[in-house]
Amino acid sequence: MESDEQLVENILKGERQKFRELILRYQSRVFAVALKVSNNHKDAEDISQEVFLQLYRSLGNFNGESSFSTWIYRITMNKAIDFKRKQDKLKEHELEEIDSTLPEEKILSPEAALLKNLDKELIHSYIIELPQSYRDVLKLYYFEELTYSEIALKLNIAVKTVESRLYRAKRIIKDKHKGGII
Image (tube, rainbow, N blue to C red; front, side, top):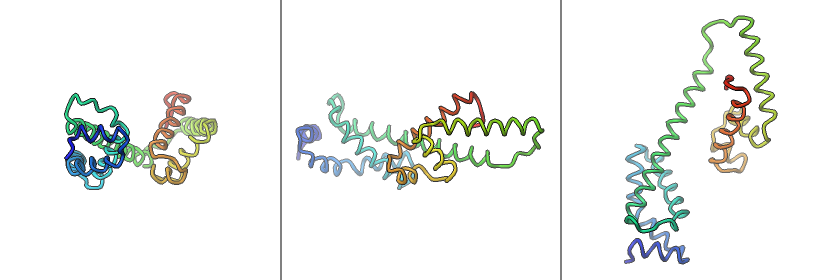
């Protein structure tokens, strides 16, 4: 049986089919670490898949300073922690959206209502000025209330692309509005 280092060397030399052996060798350990961090079976599967994708992409960066098992453990922990942070941010964002849809307790003065309408009109004009790809993601997310995955499928782009376009669109609008209501 080849050592991890020999296996990596052979994969890098072009024996890509050997990557399967690497997966079989580490899949249970990667899954166990991912499950420990995420506390969710499905999330642990997603994290594991991300780990092996990252591993495939960065296999050439393994320099042997530490053992391969330590290196893959580090990748797994980083992916699991990143995943957990994203989940926490999504939950926080969902709570903020729910909170923002609750009716206001106080009745707005005519001046405040006018300012609020002006804000909405300004933001609408900012949205129109956005590149089409950003507008599409914003509309699907906020108006059609699609998830990132659904948007990605509908637009035939990666989920990461959806996230970045949504983030950039909101950033552009915030920068233009300077502390507005978005």
